[in-house]
Image (cartoon, rainbow, N blue to C red; front, side, top):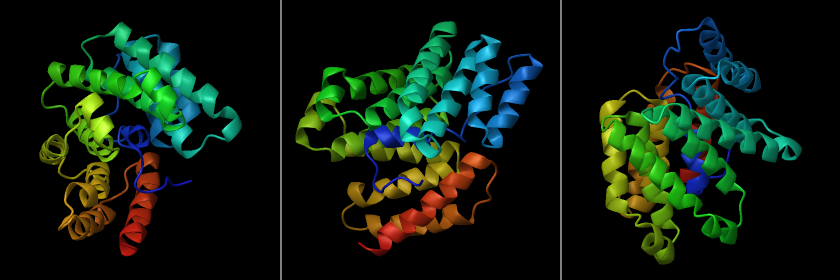
Length: 249
């Protein structure tokens, strides 16, 4: 169930958010159970366990797990319900702890999943790209060295800028900003399979001259990195899809 490449901004503000960060300890044994379920790919179980905690950390992990489940595993019939729940829990995570950058990122992740299957008119009417950007910028204000936030802002700028002049004008997306955020994410998480993958599939649009070759090299490096959890197993397949996509360019 690998996604098409290149993905739209809404779709991609998604996949990146899973393996860079897991919610910090909430001081309760069940958060560890939720993490373990998440790492094994039991995303719905992880969401139930996280939500049951009633804490920002629990809601954050729950929203993250649901967004990943929607992307990789959900059927068409259950997709809307899963994503709407992810958005509710992402919002609950931010409300429970407005100082958590992870909560802001996972709320943005959930909105991006919703935007993934929304029409252009719905996305504009509900200002989905603007809401995602605002959450990520708030996360960056909380922690300027937050790797996931930089990665997601790189994705946001790259994909919204690629959507055309109108999108760039409305939302202020910029290719140079995309590169800056991607590079900072690479500095903060140099061995991240996900960072390399997301940066690589943006490179052909960001650098029309050498982007394809640079993307191929980066994907090959990402492919060689170890798989640490179920989410990275899916990303590993995405990397293979990315190499196939580049082969056709």
